[in-house]
Image (cartoon, rainbow, N blue to C red; front, side, top):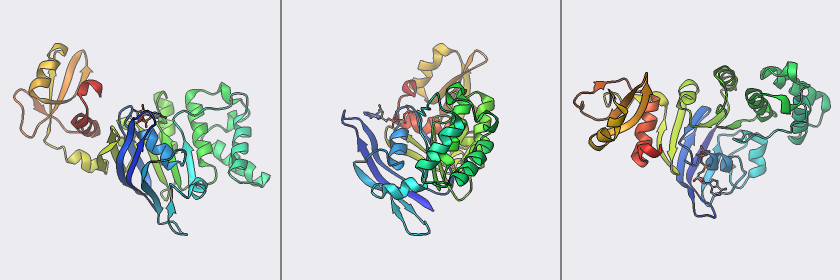
Amino acid sequence: MKLEITDLTKTYSNGVRALKGISLTIPQGMFGLLGPNGAGKSSLMRTIATLQEADSGSVQLTGLPDGNLDVLTQKDGVRRLLGYLPQEFGVYPRVTAEAMLDHIATLKGIANSRERKEIVEGLLQKVNLYTVRKKNLGTYSGGMKQRFGIAQALIGNPRLIIVDEPTAGLDPAERNRFHNLLSEIGENTIVILSTHIVEDVTNLCSDMAIICLGEVVASGDPNSLVADLKGKIWQKFIEKAEVDTYRKTHRVISTQLKGGKTRLHAYSDLPPVGFEPVEPDLEDVYFAKITEKMDIVTV
Ligand SMILES: Nc1ncnc2c1ncn2[C@@H]1O[C@H](COP(=O)(O)OP(=O)(O)OP(=O)(O)O)[C@@H](O)[C@H]1O
């Protein structure tokens, strides 16, 4: 099974071109979709989740037992296979987790109440909310709500799971718990994790893409993307006031405060004078690609 996206475009009625010909092949496993705010990640996720129309292009789910699915036109077929955790996941505050999951399971077509009870209990245990299943959702913390969000997305054994910026605002322990949960989702499922947190992709994804201003600027497996930068990233600690000067003479891809000093990373085929070589990581890939399109100040 694969999700094949070809030349997908979307312009909103206010003239914003959110998707400018996106082409991507997304295999089974965890796929990370990285991009800065406004890159078009949510627009792409909503289109794949059949919640919004594209202007042109195609999205095909191929390799299914009973043939391919055209995601843009065969929406009911896609919805039967889909689990979706949107960026803004609202919950009904006065409903218990158990009652809400039971309701969603009914909506997803699980008519038999005993079967539903079994599924709901299993999911509550999986996301570690079983002991608080009788509490109203309004009393849940951010992390608990996200785990509840995953439980509802997993109802009906989806083959395609989309999670949009799931760890923003979670504390490290909850983020860890959420990562473990995602990594337990079966190998024979496509999981698309849309995020602007590079570390989430480093930790979880075997394949990825970076999008920026509605275009794919890199795609592939994270290790190869990092390997491509070997010998090209250089670092220097400078005073903050010197950043602008360096930006005039070097291709600065990122600046970060480290112990009160500013650590500057620059991209160069040859060693720049006064810089030291540094092992690239996925963050360097991200910034090197993004700064090809956008000014570092706006990244
Ligand atoms: N319904 C809409 N109407 C008009 N413009 C929109 C709409 N939704 C998104 N946009 C614009 O389209 C562009 C892409 O937005 P999108 O939400 O897809 O990006 P994103 O990568 O998910 O960003 P973020 O990380 O901030 O959520 C942005 O410029 C945004 O302002």
